[in-house]
Length: 214
Image (tube, rainbow, N blue to C red; front, side, top):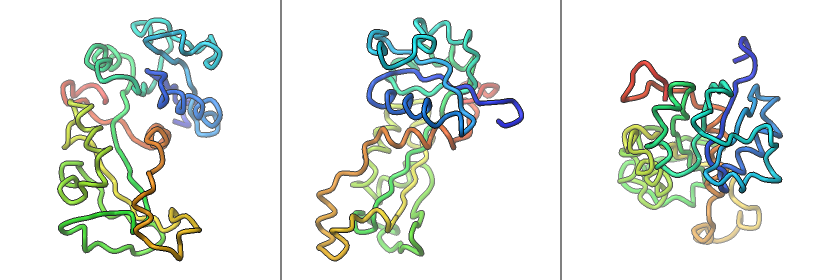
């Protein structure tokens, strides 16, 4: 990325996930070698007042004119069904990796994962296809399973799930309290997970077009 200049990123979709991602790209992208080159939304009016006019892409078919290196889809799966092949002719399309991190007391694990123990402040308990995780973490893999269903070209074998035990995520007021209280806490909003995805996940060969990246 450093050799060719900033990595040019386009965002397809401007709902809550897209808004969060775009704001971070605008604020932090340059220091990470990322340049936002377009934002597209089915309803262009939704971008008014928050996305600079120069970055608003009115027609998705014209994305090639912005010369993106990576397109991040945070819209409806139908968009990929309709335009995925076209996007891949011009850019890489973000591969999907979902990380679930919480305090060890917040997990409800079964099978071999039930015996897994933290070995430090932050321990990766599982990293691999979501298919292998769901049976042993049915209450902690809902978002991952939903992502696998929403990306049928990847499915439960193509979406990577990462389960992390992180002691730092325990709220201070609960450190000396009843661990069962943790079960009433919701995890961070799913949209927060899209930022590290954008900055860390390498593109993979498209399963239906080996010459393209997905």
